[in-house]
Image (tube, rainbow, N blue to C red; front, side, top):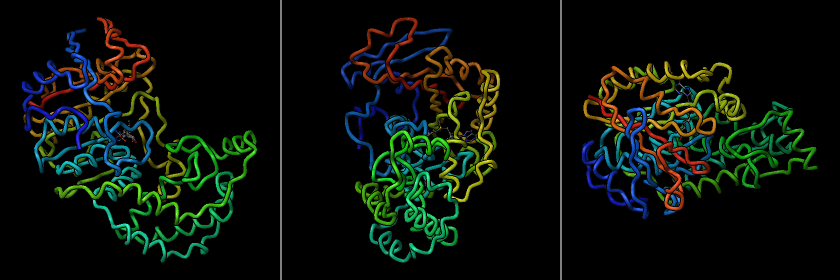
Length: 400
Ligand SMILES: C[S@@+](CC[C@H](N)C(=O)[O-])C[C@H]1O[C@@H](n2cnc3c(N)ncnc32)[C@H](O)[C@@H]1O
């Protein structure tokens, strides 16, 4: 599966990579290249999500996740089969999963233990028959609704089933149970009958109980009954539609601070593809409160970073790169995605560029993947703020 022209290099070679980016025109537009504040930029539509769907196993939602095409682009060009690919801020696990799908060693970390719960089961998938058999073993009527406030989201029968499942999963931890937990976490709230809840905001975050009460009043809705086991099986079927990941070296996953990851061996990663929290834009802990409750995670105990100012954010980035210098093998690469914040008024890639000064990394360039670039490439002037164009901004560095 690939969504872009075949890479011209198979191993880590920055010069060949650079040459490819300069001449890139797979989607009909030429790369725009310019320098600003001493930083080389390459702008093009380097990958596109419209071409072909990513592997079905990626299809779980998470706030501020990136598309699988992003890690795929770098993994295919900068690593070989069996090499370690790491994401220290893995979220739903897009990078480690894509690494597994491409036969690399998945390495991942996130401060929120929820991330490993979402990622691990998709790296070694159970069969649909095993999932179906396990779902039949659960006594769905055994659950006492433990939190009646959740009736704002769920019909009483549905809440009983959710509580029965939650209790079952607290005492069962076979791989098939972890799979069921992962799928259930993803079905907790959403906007369609495919979710356990009544209509609520998009599936990647849960509003507070008070807000849900207001949504219900505004829409004149009450939570309808749902069959939790059936919905889990249906989503499992969809996730498994493209088959299991290729054979790959065993995964290494952790749940610490990205700046301190002793479980990741020195020089074990050939490539990091990651996207840190952007200043204080997303409240990961608050967004995930309901998922954390279901999974038995104490949200207050998860110390997720929210860096209000640019100085604090830059310090966090530097601390992380000190750790990256240990875990990335010499000659390996880091692709550090920063996206757009505050309408483009803060260019985070420049903060990164400055923050890593003096560390053992060659700062190569900033790659900007501009979606719909073929239609809008005329917007990219010297000032490079293309309004209305979604872009990923990725600082690319090589470990000395
Ligand atoms: C932008 S999201 C990453 C999304 C990911 N690329 C994906 O595709 O799902 C940033 C993640 O960083 C995590 N995080 C925040 N501060 C952290 C820290 N100090 N160390 C490790 N993870 C952290 C958050 O929990 C969140 O999942």
